[in-house]
Image 1 (cartoon, rainbow, N blue to C red):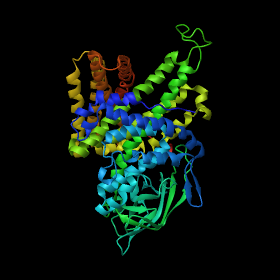
Image 2: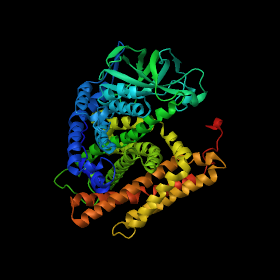
Image 3: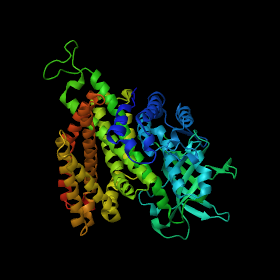
Image 4: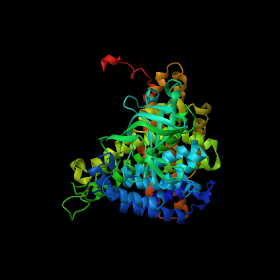
Length: 591
């Protein structure tokens, strides 16, 4: 059975050596000294490896089951969920006034990576709850916040998001679920929603559904969509639970992966719901949850790559197969371990360099969120909005690819369920699809985010990279990081310019290259993270701080990314410049 070890040393390195959290000038960050974060991450890592990870295979094999209208989670899930609740982990960054611990989002991000690496399916229950809670905090009335948020912060009540219907996914303007106004100010919600993660289960007292629906007589299409709070059990004025609402589980979806999460078909039959936010402004409220979820899904893509990589490394060190071409490295054994072979090293270095770059990227993104929320910094908000489709799309694409590469290290044994490697691949696959398929993320990046606010966030990003390269150009040891980053950044700007010049005349010119642009952007972001890590490690070595072997390893890993991954930027630009012609050459009938 696969194992998991929390990467606490690397998380600490990014938080303190690279991001310098205590000197970041963000409210609450001054308390995040290395001893404090080490204590939190150490305890979270222990729970991840000892409590959550052993249940990952159990959840995959057992799945969830629906019996007499009740959804049962896999063996051990409820006890583990209770342990998370009792430790206050679901409410790490929830405001203290609502029962949370009020910590910065970056702490929850670091903990979230470990928990998701250990058991993605189980962690989706509190993950969806946090997103629903955030939507209520942002758009709800004071009464709604007081009623729902404290119980959701502790996961006594959990939450969901209900968007998709059988006939519509991305095009939510086609939805048919109705919300009929009632005399008491509530709405009667009727319709069916599918693919509802954590839709129902046996681990919490109540489930608070956030449901998109249309109020009759409202505008057509997406402009007529509103968002409603629809609890599984109605809540009385004193906060206690009342009768069962008109919402039920039609079935549990049979999926490729994340079997431990109850992905449900939800039926609403005149269920009582309450408007969240304004009438016909449901997408504005839902996007609060969706944007948080998209960053969370990016983290899932990273987390599955981490878990798969760790196991692949152990297998490569233990599995004896062939001899090193330069001569036996284990002459006392019948064969050398796999890890002596260059192609295995290539495979593992590709994974390692992506994982460590992506980890830094996600944690840096968390600082932007904290800077916006805690300091009301609009520039930080613009940057994280620009980065969100990159985090979701690029990180999950690459994360999934890493799980495949990790499986490849095992050879035929990776294809056998006994070793458990296929679960990481199967679980990671959904991250490329839900919360907006990655093609949609690419379209969002090029069609909306690139030009948002007059293009100021994009220009700010380009200037940030330019300034960093200029500041570090003459620093000893930085040239092999700065030069590839500078070149890739110029490729990214050239691609954006191509879109501006050609896309205005023919939008297909831009949209045909959007997926390549998302990956090009992703490589620049990770290249920037590696340059920052290189500077941190070079400084540590020069000053004699920390573990020299750790920093030397970090630099070698970063050099791999710059030498082997960053050239992909030029390839993506070349493909973008071919425009729409090769993509749109065939008539639909020719496929």
